[in-house]
Image 1: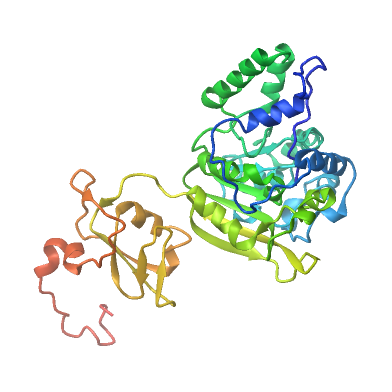
Image 2: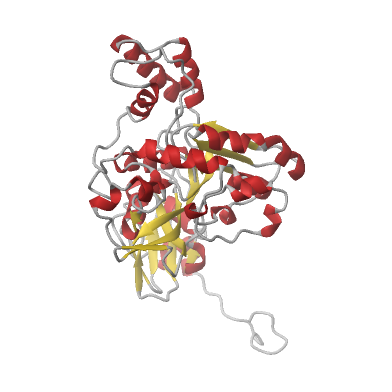
Length: 429
């Protein structure tokens, strides 16, 4: 886990009346348009969340804080090359790195001391790439201090660490701080110019570009983001992923809403408790951002903490970003194998057990991969249909696929089993 507040290196003169530089960085980071409604928790705590979290994790980067982590089992083979200091000062509640694959580009939100990044570095191999984003200077310093040493031990150097808000992955805060050092904010005109510069950076020189990441991971960090920024957080997560990419997020969830007086406790918030997502709202946040194929791939059976009867536990969710292309009828179908009588996908399409259901080419491709593949029988057409020939498919029109459509010209053939097919010498069965 890592902090969610930027520490400024800007000279004392770089201020505007009523605001410190860090306040300016925080306000600028959330300036670009997003939906104003808040998700997960309708109330807003009356504490300075970023200041509270920053203070807690700046200390945790220097001294081990055992209260900031859940028991997590990691694969020992990936820990052997890591310095003990990185292991001792890692704060998390899950291990999303186990869902990373060789050759992938990985983004770790709230990368802290870099433990998950260095584990992922070993998994993706020299052909892969791992990017960590955090906004706590002490945590970034800890991660970067061992960057060369760990790379030498692994055998390749494929990690990068950036300073930024995880809810604003387009703005590199170190570049922004350098700009502010050269262009102090002394009045409202300076403020407007700095905001304009930040906007231009997001558009033309984004820290994390659109569709650039195979898998986004995070380990007990999202709950530290203030509620009014969480919709933007999930929007950013979706933006940076490639089509077909996925997010694997471990975080603390609660089984009941957290009351205001607990949300206003700085120690509970910075301790990953009072900012916890309600379980079903955590999943809904992915859905609202456009993700599909959500799975709960890990959930603590016993609560990590209980306060006033509310249970807090770790949960890991995997969610996919599906191709955003047009829906075309390529004469494909799928059959849901069971065990449920019927299921519905994220578009509201119902698949009934054993029925040959029409799907568009985009959906067929998605169903050909995890997490759907093992639950379905794919029925491609005997004769493929090109996209130029295909008609537009209405994904809201849930129809069965006539078998003669997938069989094409072969639908009128007569082929009978040969004599002796079912004998011990036959090779047809």
